[in-house]
Image (cartoon, rainbow over all chains, first blue to last red; front, side):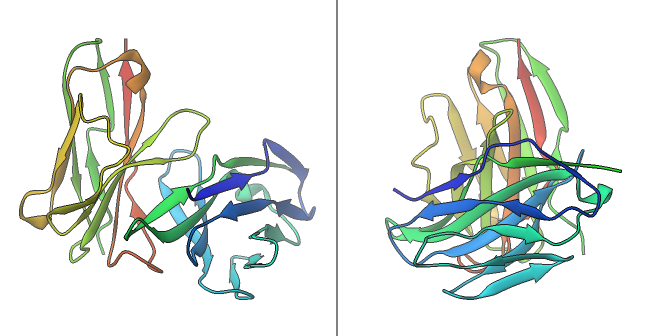
Length: 114
Length: 114
């Protein structure tokens, strides 16, 4: 079945450091890929998405490129801020068994230190 | 635009008791999801509705969990009887469609079974 694998956390960085959070997936179909973020005390919210191979999703300085050949969708940011501290979830939406559904990774906690 | 509303925010019950959670999705969203998020894990889909019909409930423990979406709007998720391992955050989400569309999440209900 479909699945999403994220790198283990927590990830601790200093402000202005470069961030990469790895995400790989397996899917029976041709999925859409997403990154969701959960700030402390809040619900999940969409950060960015990509719907086909080589698409790049971007938002708030974060980027991720849909790599079909490596089945990956790694999240990157060139210079993190303290306000980026949150849990990041990689997810896919795929038509498996006739219905589309979202499948989430386990999440990666990011802590940015001033 | 109002977001996805869930209630209650927190609930503590004893094992073998019953509990119900309520969700009001964003107006006009046909797809509604219930997820279970155990501490340290990613959200796991329990059930997905398209309007008032169930499109996926393959991971819903049907011996104790039930959900309905009468009139294709509000939804309730019930657990009867609860077990200790049901302690988790229950997330409701909604989206306009099933694929390539953003899922909007409520803040969740944190359930503690003692």
